Length: 617
Ligand SMILES: Nc1ncnc2c1ncn2[C@@H]1O[C@H](COP(=O)(O)OP(=O)(O)OP(=O)(O)O)[C@@H](O)[C@H]1O
Image (cartoon, rainbow, N blue to C red; front, side, top):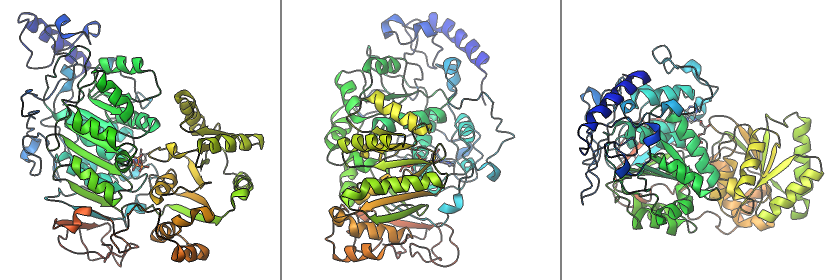
């Protein structure tokens, strides 16, 4: 049941009065902290519970955080939560009544100053507005029906079909409706129950298939349902309960924006910290209180070294684009953050890794961070969605610019230029990006660039200008390859192909998102020969027309550009690397209907047929 703002203030004021009479005793419930007293050192505010949303009874003992047990309304006891961890999972059929939910409104209630991220002030009345099919904002869910899903690991919680089956909490459900998410996407159907069950997870699902919500929902609802926690009080150090790491500043900002929408009016506070932006502003924001910290690794290390952030209270750790986070560039920083600072050990915290690609050696590395985890693959690991029409053309280096110009002219003539059709052009180098942008500009095509040599302000400006359609062409390096969810990207051009097929998968994934279709064109020449085979395989798997010349190159080409991702041998190999051992496995075939699928999974593979081997092994 929701408590009104007026009620919560009245309750809070009376709580303060009570605690004033017992000045040094810690409140058992959180108390309202007047704005002028918030974020003051503990000694200044003896009776109050410090940064606000202090939930979950952290005991601070040597054994690590003692997590409260959430009773899980309706008597459904989580069967698969880790010991001592208070996750609940409603299980199919539960109404999500919110029983057992922590009423955060009596604590640090930020609603008075929380900006409405939806930009509307309409109250969503969930009694009248259920999760109905009609509200599906044009997302083509049929596009996902044939996607095979594979899970491996012990005691995998069953998937759900609707959001209503999961007890995410009243406020979060309202926000899901505000986002107009009618139905969970396949990765959400599987990942959310697994995460709510408290399990560690390595999840691989195609670009644009809703992975952000798949890790944000369980984190937010987990924090909401935890009991009030007393966090340590060390002047100027903050103790987030969840950490979401991502490889780029723009992606961290995007996840922060999404998480803020999902957590609107839940009392869960989300803060972002990333490099290239003034740290003082971020410190001020952190000091106002933080439950979920979204960060890039470099800035986080800085904050940890300054002792402005402690990871001691982290219960949930999510790595988005996890394979990128664990590759050579980032791995030392990630190891430092996760293993060498004060973060609770694996098995004590919950760890979730998400990406569209998971090369085998990265899976092996990642398992250092996980405990008894579930591996989830929606579609083949590293595959691209067939919502994206992929074209490859042979274009000599010297002809690339004029060829690009032809494409852009054709687009313009077809009336697909402007706000409704953005074009993202990937190039190899920062210099190359600047020079191509300049050339486009002088040839009458409004373009901008994003790459690592631009200031953060310039990067953000470029992205805004592109998103708004003011400059409908964005020339980018790989800094824009992962995670960015930009509506209306109709065409991705790989002006320079990447060396690695996984990078190609992420780049083209900037179009064809959330059930929508898109186009990707690649310029191929002799400098890309090592990509011929994985590219031809990828296109074939995504039901794309593979040009005969590419097939010929592929048959002659050395095996490259694939980071061992298909080293399983078979066409659909390279899934859970633990398969080499004797882990149990479940298979779920979406649709379960007639005939085989593009993935060769026989139709009689119903949901969860343990031990059955699939054709895409
Ligand atoms: N259940 C849902 N219903 C409708 N739209 C959804 C749903 N879940 C997510 N979306 C939308 O789908 C789009 C893609 O989601 P998201 O950015 O999380 O994809 P992703 O899988 O993380 O992609 P990438 O691999 O590129 O990072 C977003 O615009 C998001 O708002």
